[in-house]
Length: 329
Image 1 (cartoon, helix red, strand yellow):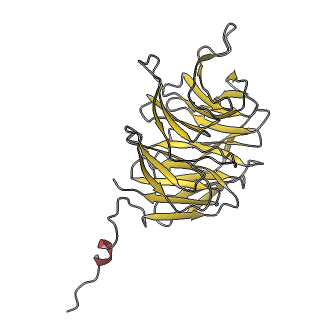
Image 2 (spheres, rainbow, N blue to C red; image 1 turned 120 degrees about the vertical axis):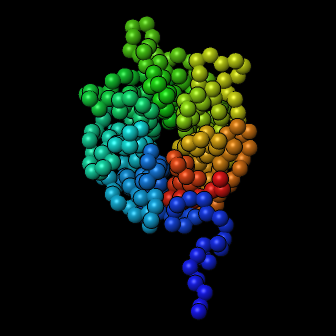
Image 3 (tube, rainbow, N blue to C red; image 1 turned 90 degrees about the vertical axis):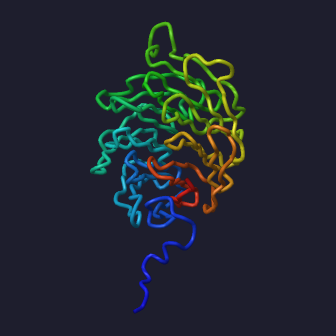
């Protein structure tokens, strides 16, 4: 009797840490640079967007099928983010609009016009009503409520805004831009007669801020900037000592001046950032030391996203490709 062969191949190579078909999956289909990538909150699907104006929806498992393409933007899509309930996807574009999409049907639910220049960044609320904030080269930070016509709240900055994030409770909007500062905007103070809504400004970066990400528990803000540093800030109202807690280095920004984003792992143990050196950089969030430089891309890595449930990192690049790769636990 011949011994059974099944299972033998599974022991070859490094130990697997995820349910993906292979340790690394490559997703191809975009016709231009891919600028934004996100896993959905369920971890079953992901989305990507960029210069070709289209938003691609993909399956994470199996063959990573591209099951939908969302068309509607008339210029490069600069950022996409899933709503916290996974029912919608928000997008912003160089066509000066923000759009809201139904993730189930792939249909556009609403188009928001109001910015007068490129919309660089969009971020949905983290709980409660489905709202989003956006930032643009016109220096405006808007908050959009799909139930309202026009912007529900507006904040005016003097400089182009390249990154925005909502605080955990939705009462604060963080923005970053060309003046190297992180601005803290208060929703309650917005549009009142005696206030422009600006509660605070955090200095430290010495060049344009390209990405912001609030930690899963809402207490920290991660920032990526063209000064080739990644910084961790304490977002709580009263902080002892310095607000900037950690500075991480190792990644790079280049003359391309792409808006390189950053992200947190769901357990808050790791952070990652895009980098112009074609590598995916991952740091230990507590100690700030570089853990991984993952190769594969052949051009700038523009966005990185951690899978919500498994040790998988997704990255998108100017090489038009997306990689999903499992990392050690």
